[in-house]
Length: 350
Ligand code: UD1
Image 1 (cartoon, rainbow, N blue to C red):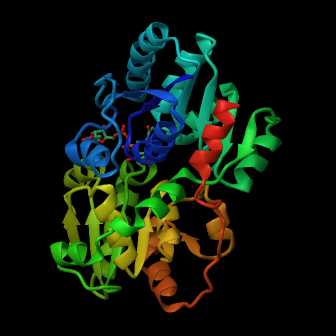
Image 2 (cartoon, rainbow, N blue to C red):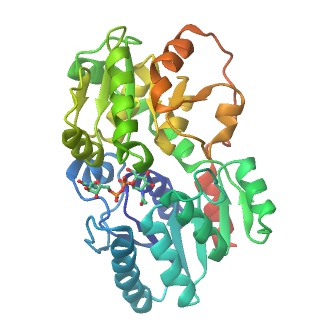
């Protein structure tokens, strides 16, 4: 059995890692293709090294571009690889432009598509990730769902065939790598104290590309940093737009951080403020609450039970203080048992 996996952006390397380990165990030949959507060392290579992912067999090196250009370039280059390699199946992950391009190339060549992290839905409906998810799910043959809600979302859209609840692959990675999270080293490196800081990340276009919202986010974090230390690993897009805005960031800003060290920091933090889909679950896995700077989230189980709080950019300070002072029982077992990759592999072999 020969499978092509297509990845390109940070969270996809994490999801791919656990599939890659499982495929090696089960003797499935995996051709790994990197689209090159993320290319800086801290956005790409560091994940391959720390998660022991095999080096990509192909790198399409598309780099950054407009959505249409990026999707089009990946589509064209990936199609050539699928024609050459003649796989039995193509695996795509999550909701990026790389995901959509891979799915379109494959469906046109009549190669079955497996979508890892299918069925997630959120508003605004015109956010690029939502467009990528909806379209990819529409043309996928195997839809591996991370949550029961994602199964229900697909059902509501009339998608039933090939749908399976497997749990979150990011939870698999988390449980398998947890022993390697070196919290003392991470705290020392960033000059922090256990439970004495808030970890914040922001990169979504609806937050970064709107100067008013970005300004409110920086104001909120500035205000928060007067009460508790704030560590902000900054995505390159956010850095560019914050620099243009010219607003002073009074908290600790650092380059993007690789998987192991970031998880060590999440585990040591008091709380997480983020608009990242991955981090809002990883903070939950670490037993930390999250303030989610989004109008809506695809990981609604965590906001419905109150563990994570949705926040507008202007309410970050108030919501973070509220969550820090509130006690809450830990809601267990939301995203499976940490065996999503084994279930995916079993389904693929069958
Ligand atoms: C992408 C995904 C998003 C995912 C996120 C994880 C889409 C539409 N979005 O968003 O689902 O949550 O990755 O981080 O695919 N840049 C660099 N160096 C890099 C990569 C990017 O400088 O290695 C800069 C470039 O200016 C680029 C911008 O970041 O234009 C945005 O990168 P892009 O991959 O287009 O989108 P993300 O915001 O990273």
